[in-house]
Image (cartoon, rainbow, N blue to C red; front, side, top):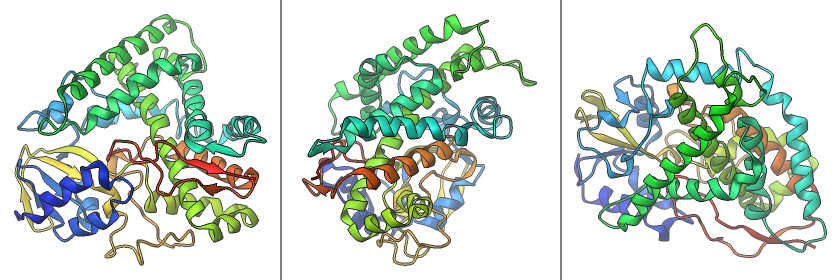
Length: 404
């Protein structure tokens, strides 16, 4: 199913000039649900085909199963469970989930509600009286960073240091040797190495000293399956540190931007606080924090959408495109918090369904509810706002607003 249109469409989607509104290009891409690219990779963009392949056991999350190594995966330490397949994936995810949610700690996330509300309240108290606010720098970033640091046991004062590493790692995710300078890749590789060493330094003194933070719990877990190795704990902490705040920053910033573009819904949320739960679900469909899973590998030949993807091929999953597929969602380009049957792909699907989804949902619900309640007639300073470079983790890098 080789076409000239789909490769060009993908190139335009990845180009920064399309970051503010990639959705018309996703509609073009969906004309070829499974599109072969010039480099031999495949791009999947429609809801049915995406959900089919995300539940296919022959789709591998381990880049070591690619027939052609990718530059962006060079220099990786022990993979986190998001980049592993069963049974290794299942074991590591179970060991992490023992300390993060059901069935062993079922009340953890909901029990954080008072602390999350207090953090949000403190941040908004600090903005009182200001007529100009950057929703990203002043609120959407510090909130989830504070939360994930507390959960993991990472000193909050170290944020400037790991923020630099995280940015470099994310920048390298979509590295293209044809268009990007080599420094983009080398900086990402070095940042992964530095972040690995940093987390290892935090882990070492926790052995034999049980504590409430996740690093301490993983280091001293005496569950029936034993403990993770130190390398596995570090890779898990690395994943949770990055995914635990970067995606939530986007969700909150995209959410506030969407509400400011739909003032009637913003006003409705003020008078109907319970609307926040379905509203966040619609945000995860309409303006998700993660747009693309840039690489998966075919364990063996995979038939999907009338196309056979050969063993070892790279597969790119366009999740945000699937969540705007008119074959699945009625009027998909309309923001509708009353939408029924909203089985979006905002957190993926299948065995890799987002580990931190329940926490991200709660953070976004509290953050957006309080922003709407406490900001005084907010309005956008610039629309569209400036966006982050990444087409994978898509969201505003700044969101300046004015209020009375």
